[in-house]
Image (cartoon, helix red, strand yellow):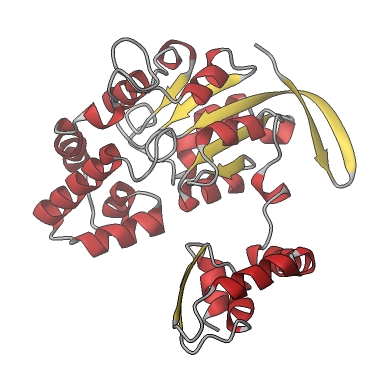
Length: 316
């Protein structure tokens, strides 16, 4: 149905009769990029590229990051023709086992044992706008993934765009989007949003006037769809610098620490004994000065901080 949208630009709000269109990538978006399905595809691509073009794993990764997909890179830089492209889809996807999208019956899912992304399934059960599924994978793979994820109704209700329907083009080629944007041109008030995990695909979409939302482990597809629907903010509206945040937080924490607790800790430590400390979630090492203030004869301090920006700040 029609989904009128209000667009803002240049400080003035513009109300039009445009529609909102939600475009969903599949691999690495509807399920995690670390999933075994994705890994099987990557391994298949590496085998194909090495056998057909003597292109090794490292070169495949370079092509993928530069062109949005290894397939697109092989076409542009290694002269892949249509016959080889058909062989690519046949060989890469023929052996994919979809068991990785299954779960034991006792986990969340239906009686068949399929594991469903419950939140995403619920959101897309009755979407308020047009939904398009756009993938660089072949249609049969898209269908099997959607079915395994409990999203099979999209096969009947959503428009499916793949290289097979778009003249062999991939999402990194602006012409891939011609048929969709001809019907929903952003310049006429239509709000077309692509949810994808690829920097290259998103950059191309944004250059055509679409809005791009990148998914990752901290912002999965369900959250991205909710942002597109206006239920939660877009990531750029709430993400902040972790270092600045912790510096401010540490000042508050320092002022609120109990001197009684600190004194009790100091009194409980064996006199003259070395002290070993494992600081899990060490942040900016705010606890280190407090531990050193206990004046142990020897201190073995181990800090674990998985957040890369905080770790980098600590080693400066």
